[in-house]
Image (cartoon, rainbow, N blue to C red; front, side):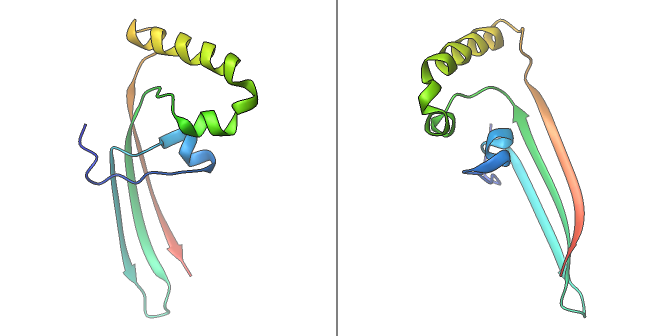
Length: 95
C-alpha cells in the first residue's frame, strides 16, 4: 500500500480508527470574509494492526489485550475478520 498522501493520527478517536491513512486529500479556498471552504477526502484500509498506541493506553490490561489481538490477527488471516476500504468525505467552512 502506498502511503505517500498519508496522515498519521497519534492520539484520540482518529488514532484508533485510522492509524495512518491510505490516501488523504484536503483542498480549500479562502473567502473574502477570511473564512475557508475546505473539502476533505480520507481513504483508509480497515485492517487490524496491533501497535504501540494500544499498548501505551491500555498497559494495565496488556495480557487480556494481547490475547484479543492474537485472536483477531488469526481471525483476520483466516478471513473471519474482513479488511475493507473506508472512504470518508466532507466539506466545511472554517471561520
